[in-house]
Length: 320
Length: 281
Image 1: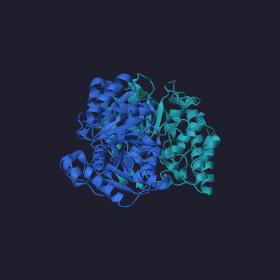
Image 2: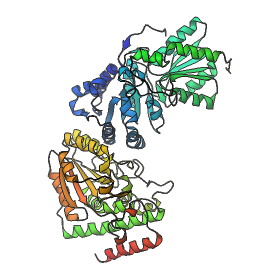
Image 3: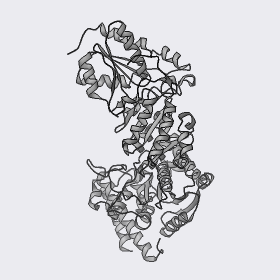
Image 4: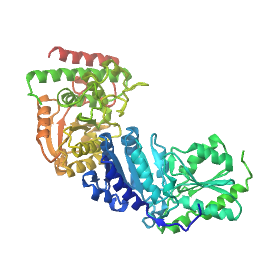
């Protein structure tokens, strides 16, 4: 895998097409929306299958519980909205009506993280991964790009149980290919390396690949893992990375308080302690700005990943 | 539905007393739980489980069964009592209510208790869940119906009204809601905590077909359900005036028995009253 220039593509467009495709193949797939369906492209499903599409207005708690009721009667509902509404605003509904009830509800949300951009901090949720991975029975997916978002939707429809999936509003570099496949619970090594492992999710996977290429020029060999399933964690792959490369850097468009960095660090501390550095949003809210400007201001860049690797290299070698 | 005979009414009344005895015993046994709101909803639940609902205790997940959703999850003692008496699980199991390793959790858990259709405890989610069920039945052209019992305290919850809008948007005439209007919530009278009246006008404004009944009169309960079945193009809400703690004189209308069990002495008095009622039938 070489770093860029990649095609910039919309995860929402891939998601919209995937839903229509799923709808064609499985009559039990239904979609509920909350006045954001044009934005999510879930409206395409509504146009193709008007009898299986429910526009429920700006009432996300109701949307989640309606999805739960549909699932209890055998449907496979995709609940679609923005991440801030599909996680934080509806947290206890998801907890009681979806996860505790153990229903086959797929919550697919765009507009995750800082790159929502000019809408500002009210819409830039950097806490959803942590909220969702804390709920028992919940599977949490963070696809890296458009094609992987489509594969995540497909895999979600084929798995029984509650799923939360978050992706971006902004176009993101396409770094995966169809040959990569997608299995829930399996991380994927995009590039091998022996000095450090960069574990990223979402749009930070591309930045990990860029960082790996920059490190290569310094003769530092960086492995890159796409952690598209945050829960359940692919523990064997993380454990192997810790043993074989001795250093881990995580990268996420999410708070480091309880995101993938925290999840990976906890797993490593228990199984095979090696130094870990986390690139992500610190314990702060975002602000208005363009997506790229925000990523730079809040330190979510390939350069910051490289800096983190340099810091770890100074701490010596822990490989065993 | 079969004709409403004197014999049917008498049988339902006897069953309701049996359920009330279970409720008082179960909550006394564990010294916790919510007897008051279980007893106020008892006649509605009895009418549904022992006359209206098409359910099969031998096959609790029969796909074409009617769905009963208890939105006011704290009233689960009446649900468990009805399910046990209807044969979904042994009556003796009722005494495990709220105990460690029991299938009868303090608030309903889906998938654990045979016959329980929804998890509830956090208020205000049940009607939305029922909307999802009713939409699914309609999509599949199925005749099964969804019945949802809400508390009046739950009328405070915003999501209840989100669900009310969605149900009328989709004209869900296969959905019937009951409001157990006992007038008392955890900390006091509903009209002091958060005034609900005019409640009928609120539901009418949300385009529901609204019926007001005495929630302890079986003839009125059954007639209202019949009318809901006949109503086309709109969901029906039956606002049932009830008495919290109904059936035991010293528990009736007492805020205390929302979330408190009887003492040993009170249990004896309560059972004596209920048994007296049974004997006079």
